[in-house]
Amino acid sequence: MSKNISINVHHITRVEGHGDIVVDVKNGEIVKCEWHVVEAPRFFEAMLRGRPYYEASHITSRICGICATGHATASLRATERALGVEVSEQTELLRKLVFHGEIIDSHVLHVYMLVAPDFFGVGSVLPLAASHPEVVKRALRIKKLAGDLCAMVSGRHTHPIAMTVGGFTHLPTEGELKAMRERLVDARADMDETIALLSTLPWPDFERETEYVSLQKDDEYAFIDGRIVTSDGFTYDLDDYRRVTNEYCVPQSTAKWTKHNRESYMVGALARFNNNYDWLHPRAQDAAEKLGMKPLVTNPFLNTAAQAVEMVHCVEDSIRIIDELLARGIKEEPLYEFQGKGGEGVGSCDVPRGILFHNYIIDDDGLIQGANCIIPTNQNHANLQHDMEALLPQILDKPQEEIRLTLEMLVRAYDPCISCSTHLLNVRFK
Amino acid sequence: MSGGQRSLSTLIVGLGNPLRRDDGVGVRVAEMLAAQELPDDVEIVAGGTPGLELVNVMEGWPRVILVDAAEIGREPGAFLRFTPEQVWLAEETFLSVHDAGLREALLLAQVLGVLPPEVVIYGVQPASLDWGEGLSPEVEAALPDLTAVIRAELSVQGAEPPDLEAAWPT
Image 1 (tube, rainbow over the protein chains, first blue to last red):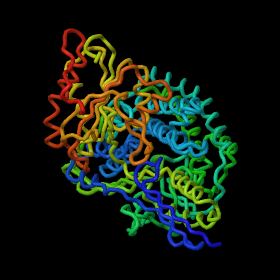
Image 2: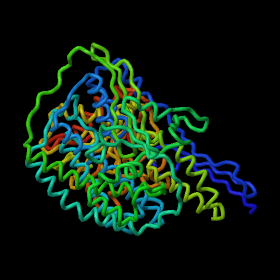
Image 3: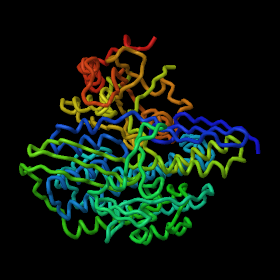
Image 4: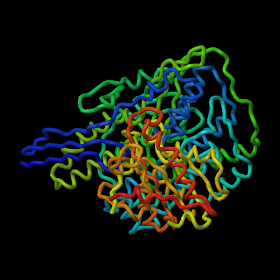
């Protein structure tokens, strides 16, 4: 086959940030197939240095408008483990609850607003809202529920203010919890519709097994704390996260790449699904069955489907948590006071896009002397590159436009958050 | 201009990321207004970067005032008041360079028919969007005028509507 293809997708659409796809095929030979990340360097690690420990979670929650709770939680866990702070069961329950809200919030955005347009053959959620308003309205309804769940626990939408070292400065009332429980039960219908919608989508046919990395716990589907596990059979304590991430630099990316047992690994909903399927709520396992999914799922496009399964799980587990909170009764608890002794700690959460690490060194004055933060999207870049290299030869006989679209869909499947950047409104007056 | 003449429940949303210098101007303005005396039917949200959640945040309010950093082709610190009808929101780059922001949320609300009847945007020209905290001196200097204008717009009885004719693009 002698075919020339040149694809250069500058700043791919419908991902959170900046990334380019560059493909060059000459006479049927692949000359270039690269995933470029053009992320501006981040300075938040430097921003943290010299700041008091109690500011860290508020600063880092601003890293990302979507994963604000995830960053705040990982940050709080790093601080608490550095300072030896024990948190109460009530705090653990509330953190899990708000975390579920964020998982639903982020996943519904990705599934409906960023991925669904590909399958409806439209360029964005806007024409989708015009042609299928009920689909987009459902998405916004789920998003509102998730946002309200987060606000109920953490004090406000998007950026959690009530979450603090050792606990919460604000607690939901019993009335709020009961009302939220009712809405969550009602949301089952929207979850069913979501699974029904996804079960009709023609996912691209592509398999490539890789190493799947996530948190794991013995008693629940892990999002906060636990141990690091990989599908290749490795287990690590959180403190040893660097043995998994092994960050290195590559010329095509301003973001660092990572690798562990293979040339790359994958994090995110699909990795969690593969590693922790047994702990999914039965309704979520049922949803997975409707989507034809059972571990080990090796089609990366199905990361989006795994997100939908997790939405079902988080709705059900939120109901369970609220029941437990109501049974225990909400209690005011004393907040942590600094004891004049610093230390080092690692906090980890499996946020919507995958496993996240925060690592702080805090001195005896309570000031942060060092900070390291490894975000999930950076851990996926190398895997995305290898997927692309494996996928391209399989679709080379397709028209160039279809190749471009399929590669874009692959990138979007990872839900990459390349740069938690500004949102500057560009104004052109009429 | 109708804001100065009748009483409307109003939601004020300050948008932006305070870790990106002047991008945080909306949040700063929201915090300043929240610390001042305002009519009872005014609610203020320091919205940060809610993306498409803004559609939900705005829904049901008769009037929404949005404050955000904006590329308006002016000197840093200059600000303009405009409505969605006065600017080209729709462009082919929907959800491209940045993730969903104000423009996308307004468009989506429009298409779904849930855009509040009155939406007013105050766009502030930034000097710097680098990673870092604190506003540039130019944008900092604009804050007294900007908050005064928004307060005038909010006043129910007897207040003069803000005279911003001079601030209109030519």
